[in-house]
Length: 501
Image 1 (cartoon, one colour):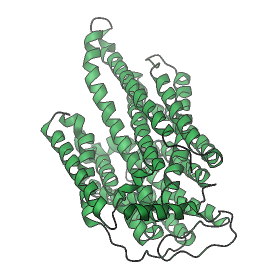
Image 2 (image 1 turned 180 degrees about the vertical axis):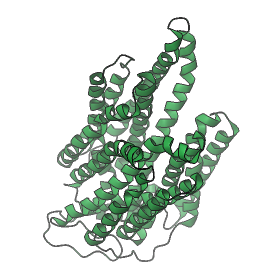
Image 3 (image 1 turned 60 degrees about the vertical axis):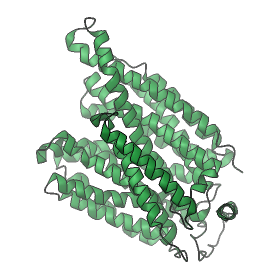
Image 4 (image 1 turned 120 degrees about the horizontal axis):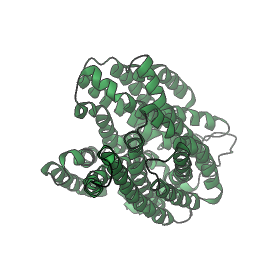
């Protein structure tokens, strides 16, 4: 019965209203409205882009200020890191629940609520009088960020037809690239010339504008009739994701064989299994696991998880290579890392438009292959590599990233029934979070295990002053090799998505 219902919803998805229609269709009473006609759809995309930019900027602007925040409050590194960890854990555990909420009550309501909460929490973060106040308000800010990230792609997919979806998602990727590019530099300027508090206060004027603009542009939606929130599924999902993410984040510090990490991984497995069982038997599940029977959906999400794991294994370690390996300042290192988001900014819209014409399989697979090549070129870097040696390699990595993300997202979101867009959008965001955390965990584990080996090998062969530096560069190179292997798997999984029906 559940499969018949899913097939019916898929059929509804495939019979989309043409994007070039001249008159808007009335929203159905039991689901989100159809594709937005005419020029108005590009105004809708602009509201999504503002939300994407805010969320991305916030994630990249905070890291550069952590040393200053640590000094201001006089706390340890292990304490101040929770300014980032608390945000990441909250985001990673609530995405699925928020996605389902959007399917139930409407994407506009959740999206506007996310803007308001994110803006309010930003002001509270800036006004924090203790590190624990800041961490607590970061959790509140992450709830708002979750609402923005879960709803944005769903609104875009609902608004654009299959002939324009890739282009729209590619244009939205510009916001991601701008946030990643501007964040570190803007954070450094605000922290140095104003105060670390302004990295949060800056969200106030942007947030007020975004709320008013989204309220004006986004169309109202009818609440879906006879809907219920899956409380058992939400609780089990929250517990399983929290245990898994916490184990991955703290595994290196606690030890991968420690009782804490093993216990958390076992808890994640048990709760995750219970979650699947509950969802399969629930009339209105929070996550319809039958969506994973759709090949484009599971292959695209798996490819996204693998790509982000390989990518973040490398990108997490590049600042260490530049600062501790080559002795560059944080500002100089930040500037040298901008080719990746800048290249993605240029390539993503082109790739998205291309996928609308020829389908997502080829550009997404090519993107994964180019990223793998880019990771391989990073293994050739050494202590004497020049800025130009680094830049062209990062450009290759950015080209692959830009080729992959827009077509992959378009394929995933275009394959699901419209009433499940919120859930599917949240799942995509969930895979990104898992990929980031897994990539960082792999990077830390490889470097930690290989660094002593290289120290022992180089002792007596290099001057003592260069011993730690050279061993670190070799350990980072080993992590890049692991990232290559991970990224290469994504080429295969991307091919498995098949051609669109």
